[in-house]
Length: 325
Image 1 (cartoon, rainbow, N blue to C red):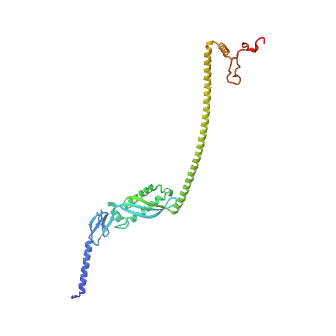
Image 2 (cartoon, rainbow, N blue to C red):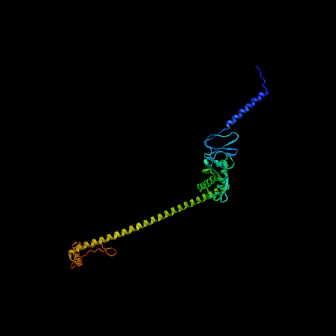
Image 3 (spheres, rainbow, N blue to C red):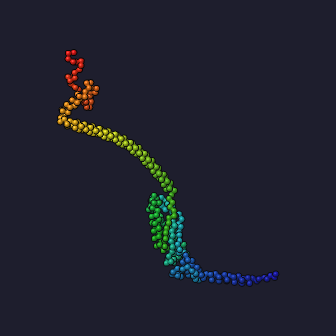
């Protein structure tokens, strides 16, 4: 194969043409820039902003080497603020983590890009973070550490309201929400709080033991009172039973007496007077007497006297007492 030596001038010419082609390609490519749907843009020419309203998504023209294309994200942006410390009113250190969400309205795009911080595609987050820290520290400086967890929702709402008002006035951005991702008390506070919880638990346990003992004592008192009441009721029952029995006996005796009186009255009535009735009984007894002595004698010591008529001695003449013997 035949080799051909290329002259230096020819090599330089090719290099020049290659550079020219690259330059033309660069110029053609620099005529355009693209704005994404989540962005808004604008153009600066020698430091002068070219458009009063931000450029919408799409391809846009600019002059190569003269114009600078600026773009800014306007969709929802979340700023994660790394852990930082604040101090409460009772001089307790608290470590916080906060997330802040915002968007940038179209009418504020130029303000954010060219009137806040550096010109162009400014990182607004670096402006927002100090404001969030400052407003959060102010609110926590008026709080007592013991009430933070109890009032966490209210505290978050107060911080969100204060931060939203400030960043809206300063930067023109549209705040959407703020979340306290973490609240970490100091190790010293945690240790003292743990000791306080232990002491409280011990006090609660002692109180529960006291209540248990009191309950057991009350149960014994209730049982003793129940036993006493039961004994009293039993005695009262016996007493009432005896009283009822005595009243029943009394009533029975009264009724028996009344019955006997009625029977005697009925028996006396045909004779007219008690004396005539007694005379009748004596006569009847004499007729029925067999001449023997009575076998039953009732008298003193008995509740009722039993009267047995005895015939007169002169009416009975014994054989051994006949006259003349």
